[in-house]
Amino acid sequence: MDQAFDMQAYMTRGVERVVGDIVRATFKNPRESAYMARFALASRAASKKRRKAENAGEHIPPFLIASITSQCNLHCAGCYSRCNHATVDEAPAQLLTKEEWLRVFKEAGELGISFILLAGGEPMLRRDVIEAAGEYPDILFPIFTNGAFMDEQYFRLLDRCRNLVPIMSIEGGRETTDARRGQGVYDRLTAGMAGLHQRGLIFGASVTVTTRNIHEVSSDAFLKNLSERGCKAVIFVEFVPVTEDSQELAPGDGERAYLSREIDRLRAEHPEMVYISFPGDEKSRGGLCRGGPGVLSHQRPRRRRTLSFFSVLGHQRAGRFAERSAEIPSVPGAAE
Ligand code: SF4
Image (cartoon, rainbow, N blue to C red):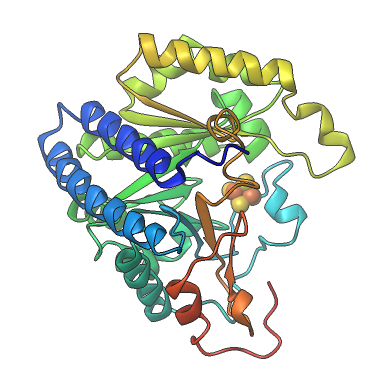
């Protein structure tokens, strides 16, 4: 590994680029761009905090993934989380409370974490935690949702708290989306997008890329459709196979190279949306997410007994945050 590589400088540039792209993408929406301009300042201040910690020998990642529930209402084909029993039908009895999540968000902010990705299960089942996240305007909370629970109450909350940004999971058009996610999911998703758009609320889309849908989801037609519905960011996530019979859906080197070229083209030809790819953007910069020095941390929804309560991707230290998290009351028998 290149010893001269400066992780904090690289991450700071990456975050500033994404924030700058979002500010541009929301330019015609005054309320949204006012919030994003404010967030850009907060994000710069957060970068300085991380830099200071780095200089003192403590690595703070800029992103945290908070899995706020393991409950989900859908049974999507090939869902790795369900296959690993990390996602279930019913809410487990020992989920972290809203107050405990508030504490996590507060401490993450103090450490200089600017983005907290709310995930699940289906995170919109935890309205209490999402309302709590709205109280931290200096942190941007993308909410990775299947869109089933987007209702009037959520529209009002998202309108009031511009730091909460839904990222809707979609697999392509109606046929492709419903084939993986279930009948009627596409129509519910697009109805939610329409409600957001009518109210001037921004949202993004998360697209699981497989060998089957790669051409559809990188096509101008699909992306134009998303943009016209009000989408401002598209996150391409490579399908990860968890069963033998789904191996053929996993993109190989050829598909990855194709997607990478398409994303470069889209960034040049359609700058009205932001395009991010996982792990593509990370791999092209040295595999930062999976094995490198730490772009992401991951906080799980249930209580655990030990320090490893703070579950970390990439083996980085989370410093003060990890130590303090360990003080949260333990629950005997709680499993990951
Ligand atoms: S919505 Fe997400 S967590 Fe739920 S089954 Fe589908 S892929 Fe899995």
